[in-house]
Image 1 (tube, one colour):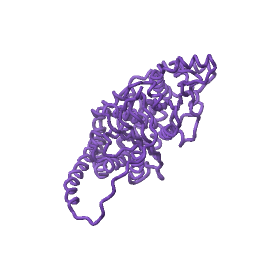
Image 2 (tube, one colour):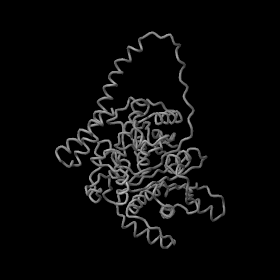
Image 3 (cartoon, helix red, strand yellow):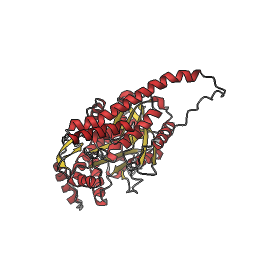
Image 4 (cartoon, helix red, strand yellow):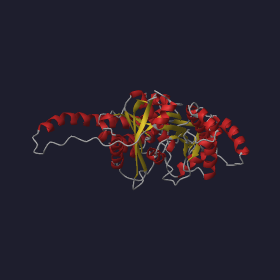
Length: 457
């Protein structure tokens, strides 16, 4: 399968150079992405047909082994209801819109209208068309000055904050009608212990955001939640953690291990669409181009999840159908996937098996895979290694959504966006969805999203 990508890319580059031709956007997408994936799908389908023919013959062969015992269903761990999800992505302003675009295979990066590489050519990017960064800058700057904070945000950070503010505002509206809000005010007046849960506000930042940027941004998000009507004294901002513990997967694992009551909002926002980011990628030979098809396609956006235990989910949406986060498994590769000569899906398969066992679900029940995987061969082959082995019932062409390949590389934003899409698909299909993260050079995460279940009143 590596030959399929290699032959397609080398042939395309040779043809363009031989004819002194600058490829258009459609050429790049067709020859560097669509054609190799079509060849992979062809090989996969051929293998599936072959296995289907060979399986009956193998089953008919005599065997001296004893009949295996019936498998015992693994014990399920705790789960959290995914009360709501919000995204601002280049191809959708809601999980439903983005999911529909991904299903139609219409979400593709394009040549950026503003950013060029070192040779003056437009870079391939995934840009959100309508971000009002100036309005966010004006509103937030006044608030920052009133609170004696003076961080210097870059233009791309303002774009990220604009998208992130919309996501926080949308999720905050979902908790604005909590039935215990009025009771909380009465309990405070009578100096009684509050029954309203503590909202855990967790933000996952881009690696290049400095502490002063993170502190100002999380306080701004907290301010937006308070504006939506949630009491100031019932918000707990997650403390700054080490680089490994601050990742989205680690945050989800911590939430699943917490004792109820649990009500949490996890948000990520970021943007690589700035001259500095493009220059940094270009200087590190990590920017996608015709001469470097294994480079990254910069993206931008924001995504967020609102999670709750069964009791809080019932209060927020009695009788509503809410998908559930059943299990999360995380691990780290011993070597960077960016420098490995061969894609290895072993860790990702182990994490998928562990997550499905923790969720009490069989791999055959998985109806779709949502991943933050982008176009790079190492990531595509790793993902296909899991899909072909763990979920052979899925069609890679229609049952695998690769958010990174459509929305570009934006770190934790891409992973949370894939989770939001998984929630949407679990709800619309009423089925189990496997959500995979392999965009990072080292970090690997697998989450199991269960189908929507009625929350008792």
